[in-house]
Length: 361
Image 1 (cartoon, rainbow, N blue to C red):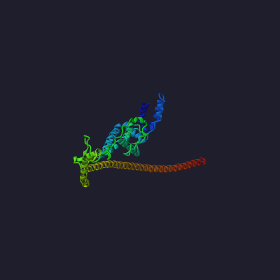
Image 2: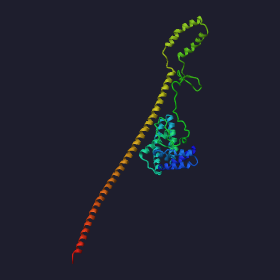
Image 3: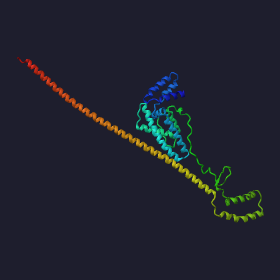
Image 4: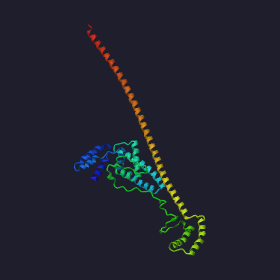
């Protein structure tokens, strides 16, 4: 039944906006002959909003435009996952062009189906198509042609497509979103200035010599193990007493620069590069939001100017109609006076005729 419901929904949501209710009733009536549950499901299909219907017209009648936006969205998500700020800036420019073209195509598709799209609806259509370039679920919802409401994306969270599609199963199983690359945290990095090579053994960065602390530890380690396993001898005790001043001198000497400091500097540099990439990505997103707001402002300004021009034209038409009404009223009064005058003249002529008849010759 799910496939039959999808086929029926595809046919219904491709129709003109004003034909949806009647077509849905007829489709449910036809389906009731073979399956009452299917008829009930068809009857429960909601009517889309004007903006969602416009996007559906684009998906049904201009599928190439929707496919281009989907491909661009996948490319942008891959660039964002790799923190490629330069590629994101170029792709943002390309998205602005494609969105403008797609909104124009959506307007034409809607007009071909008998409905002209206003400025606010076109803005909502553009926001929905932009969401399709930022999220896989939104792209699938737009491409399904079964959209019920507009979508929006903030660039951070996933787009909410709950109750956004007439038949949710039409979206299928969505692939997971690409995750940004994760650099190893400090806890995951090798400790003590060591770096693991390909062979698995650790060695100091730069291949430098061992520090004096490490040499003394390596030298005294066997002695300590002997101390734990064998009783101390007098000669050993004398040697230990003789070595203590030298060990204290070695430990009190200033520490040389070890490879661990170099690794810390490299880690700080990696963190700085990561922060710079994140900042560049955020700057690109903010720039896109600013440009989108500017485009919306320009569109709204154009709509306001158009509304003002229409209002001015209507005011002129109203003034002309008022003048015509006043002229017609004046002419009606003039004709009424002329008719009244003619009626008096006719009465006077009639009285004169009567007098002439009554007058003897």
